[in-house]
Image (cartoon, rainbow, N blue to C red):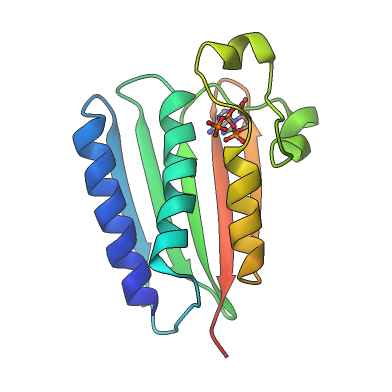
Length: 151
Ligand code: ATP
């Protein structure tokens, strides 16, 4: 159920807040969540960890990281927003490809293989959803995924 989505998000956020005390994690739930979506807890947790991990890796301490959840007409939308370094527009469509990393020099010092977002995309699409990103360099990044209601 969407309610379960909320408790999974809250649990993962609580863990991130404990691990990264220098960041402020904000949970923003818009309206009522009355429909069920089909994603397993385990997969949702995996996706959230990938996206929150990136938000932490690619933004400065003391910056807010926000998760917003909202029920739409046919699906549930989840947005993870950071105030970090951002992603150049011409590279936005590549970040979901396996092994793709923006600016190898910049990314190398942060570790990682460029696999996280490809895995997140595979999971979300496996449930009939989709995942996209918007970004402004030096302003921040919003990664959004939607999951259709269970029929
Ligand atoms: P890992 O495989 O450990 O997740 P990664 O972070 O390099 O490593 P992805 O999560 O697939 O891999 O991200 C791909 C690239 O997209 C990253 O290398 C980074 O350059 C860019 N990126 C992803 N999320 C963000 C973000 N929130 N802000 C800025 N750049 C990002």
